Length: 188
Image (spheres, one colour):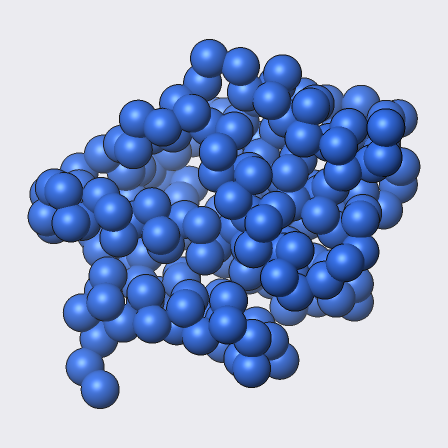
């Protein structure tokens, strides 16, 4: 079995029975969507495997060492680039901004182009989900998040877009930019 197929199977097992916050859909679908988006940007199987696995450490209590053991050092490094320090000693609403600032710094500092592709796949999938939630629930949707202020989310998603400008000719980046404008009601 190739690395991507193994990653898809691993993620499916890790997320078995879990649903995405607010959306109600199986958590594994987000990982698969991130991998599909990444697949429009690269054929690098390690990047695609990392996209399928990107939330397993953060959300499914998989150890990063297990990712490295099964998928290798680069896939583990890519997954780690997307894994936030949740700061379990702090309430999530208090650590949200710190975690996002750290994520942006990691993204800026990365020399592996796969990290940017992985981020775009993940964040575009998130924005698609936010858009669907907004259509169904309106602006009340923000109440389910640790950070309830939509302007804070807007800051984060726009900052990611600015870091990823080298991908701005891709359909994925253009969709990402357009969804920021729609979800956060940007002018222009």
